[in-house]
Length: 174
Image (tube, rainbow, N blue to C red; front, side, top):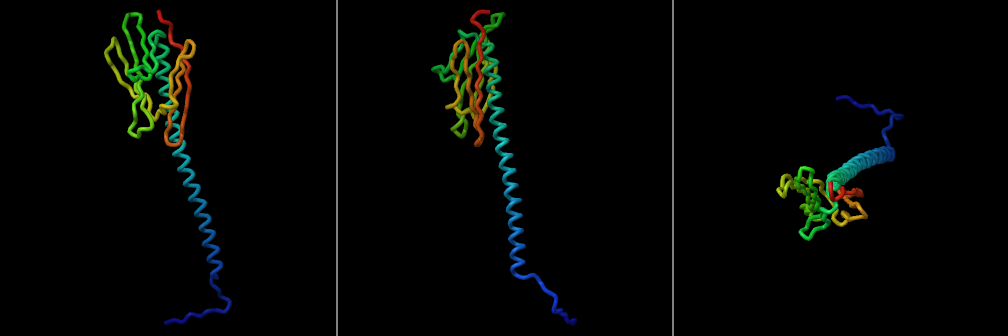
């Protein structure tokens, strides 16, 4: 077997040098890990925010369109039957239309789903889920002068979005 010669000037790393290298590696790893977690957290918050915005935009668009069609004498807000909003109108050909909006509980229990039921001559012809994650405490529809003020809030995760729409229905007669 061969013998190893150790030269007097040959040195290895000291314990302090190794500890410094380990500490620097730990700092770099911690910085990278923190950055990665922040990016994932930001992506999650952004996705929740976009979902909340989408929900209030969907609700605002459909409710506003229906209010524009509705005749002011055929509007009921917060009916005793539990409907959030009832809108009605009669077309020039005599066909009667109605739309009922209701807020129903989501499985989580805290938030609601906004449903739209469309009737033609008192016959239900479609039911549409308009929006989810609706905060019932911050969502309302109230008459203001000759218009309806519809405020809707959606909360997804920790992100919330509120929009207010003020829409004037058409007059009673055509």
